[in-house]
Image 1 (cartoon, chains in turn cyan, green):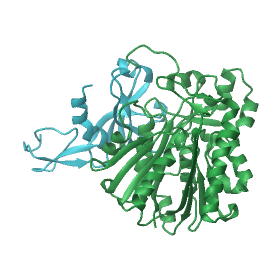
Image 2: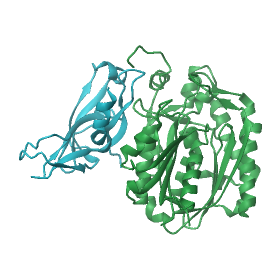
Image 3: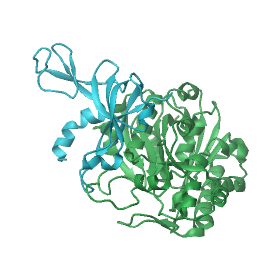
Image 4: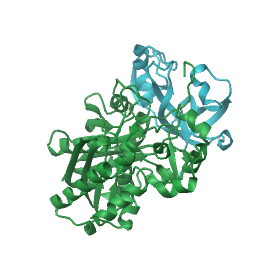
Length: 131
Length: 350
């Protein structure tokens, strides 16, 4: 990945910074240029909560090359507290442990490297909350 | 009063038993278990490294301290397994936790004592009045060569400590360091696995430095071993810290709470700091704690802490390290372990 692209995405991938429309208050994650609620182009950064629930998931057996060592792995859709939904890996679990509505939290992990000499790309993954 | 205002610790959920490694190499599992006093060790997930472990520990430290991340004026990560040879670990952490960009950042290295160096400098900056809060972290995902004695113990984990002078939970009463040029363990540039000097790592290295630092700080602070509720020494295995404790006059009871090595392994820069986190998780106000780290090469940093009335309120604000060690343990066989630790050669791009 190009360094310039990487640092543009740091706020959303590292800190879950969404774009909150200053016109209608709608949250966009990842942030976007124009609000699809009211058409405004004015946003402020809003940090999303790291807690949420698992809405659905699938198990990846045939992965892109950067993820081939991790198969089988889980990719899920998480609804964060407050309603924003995002797609990410669900780590440190067996698929048999998962359930719709299971409480999860987002943690900071390595996502991928395009090759061994490239930068390490960090971001969020979900893990089950095991209280 | 200057000292710890928040702490956090983290270990990955993956484990390999000492017995599994012994069987792989034709060793006797029972003699390994008894010789090293070690049952199993943590293994980093394929998506974990010193940076992700540091972020997890530091996030809990900030949660416990109840401060705004941007109030932290310095961040130091001590590790011998920084993911990049050139590019700091700390820069990723300060952006992940919202600490930066107005912050001083540096990565430290000194084999297994880089974590206490980070803590020492963070403490010193706050004590000097340079900043309100400073964060010191020790974390590692260390490797031992396949078949080497280190493979039984080299594990993954870390702990983070925020130093401050307001609502201190553990005041730092004294610090002491003892350092010499002692080549007991080393790794040169481009070498994948460390080398060590076998039995030389014991008396001339670990024990000389740990005992000297401990005796130095006891004399400086005027304390006797029996004054302490808890003590934690660097834990390269289960045997060394217990022998050091006995030599100095500490009891098994004083050591028990911080002695995580039997089920965690040696988290290198995270070793004694993680033991300290386990002690802070359960200590009561007024307890005296002795910490002595050890880093090959070689040196020891010693600290005397005294806990305060602010401690109990913070203990349940984040997961305790012994809870993390018990929860969701996922055992690997040697083949999975070799893949996780990339001990086998893969084709690009992985």
